[in-house]
Amino acid sequence: MGNDRRGNAQKLLIVERKLSHNRGHHHTQISALSMLLPDHDMNFVAGESYDGFLGAAAGKLTTKSIKLAKLRSRLQFGNIFERLGAVLGTIKARHALKLPFSAFGVPLAELCQSLQLGPADLVIVPTGDLDTLESAVEATAMLIGKPRICLRFLNSELGDRNEKIRSKRLSAVLAKLPPNVFLFTETEELASYFRKDFKMPVESGFYLPCSMPIAMHPKAEIVRGGRFRIGVFGEPRPEKGSTRLAGIVAALAELAETGSGRPVDFVIQGSIADFQEGVFMALCKNFGRVKGASLFLRSIIGFRLRNSNSYFIRWTRSCCPTKRPSIASKAPVWFKMPSLHISL
Image 1 (spheres, one colour):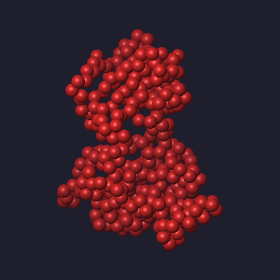
Image 2: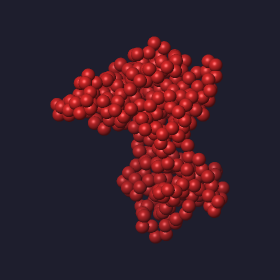
Image 3: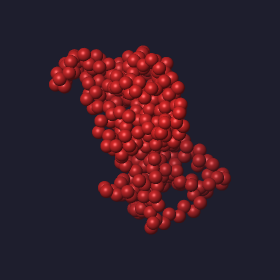
C-alpha cells in the first residue's frame, strides 16, 4: 500500500519476501523504514501468503519462484548427485530445464517499471539473502532508469545452508554486481566476514528498530529505584555482536566502581548453555556483582505463554562469578513484566 502521492516525492519500495503474517521481525521493518524516510512515497512487496494486515502490497513473490531458483543453483554449482536431483526436481515441477537466472528478478523489474522508479528512488531489502541479491542484479540489467537497491544481510547463511554452493553462488553474483546495488549488514563482525572471505563491498551499521510496543500491566509493581535497565533480548549470535557484551559490561563495571553514573541492570536472555559454554560464557566467568556499586549481571530465561500477551521471566539469583546460572537456583523469583506485545 503506497502513501498518498506527493508530487515528485522520492519513491521507496521495500521488499520483504517472507512478510506474510503479523509475526517475526519482517512487518516491523516496514514501519521502521516508513518512519526513517517519511518524505518518500512508500510501497512494499510481500510473500505469496501475505494476509493483508498492513494494507495492500504492491506485489507478491511466489514460493515456486524461490524453489526454481534453488534448483537452478544446484544444477549450476552442485556435484553430480545434486545436479541429478535438480533435474528430477525440475521435471517434477513441470518446468523446462532452462531455469530462471534468479528467483524474482523479472517480476521485480516489472514492478519497478510500473511504479516508475528511477535513479532518485530507493529499493530496500531489509532481510536480504542470495535469492534477493541475484534478483536485484537481474532486475538491474533489465531496467533503463536504475533505482538504488540496498540489501541488508542478517546472517552468514544467506538463505542457502549448503556452504559450497552458497560460496559459488555468492562469488558468481558479486562478479556481476552493478554500481546501483549497495550491500549492508548490521554488525561489523558479519561485514568483516564477507569482506575477508568473499571480497564483498559491504558496509556495517544498517540497524532498524523492531517494534515492541510496551503496555504497562495495571497490577505491575516495578520499583527500579533510580536504576537504568538494559535489556538484551533474542538468541545470542556472534554475527549479531553478542561477544561484545562482556566488554561492554566490563567498561560499565569500571564506571560503576568510581561511584559516578547511574546504577545499571543488565537483563540478558539466553539458554543455560549460552551462559555455560556459549557466547555469554565470559559474562559468567568474569562478571557478577561489582563491589561498591549497584551493577548486576542477571541471567534470565524468557518465554511467552500461548495465547497471551505477557512475557514471563524466571530470574536466577546466581550473580556470583564463581557460580553458573541454573534453573535449579535455590531461590528463583517469578514475576510478571509489563506486557510486551511481540510475536514469537
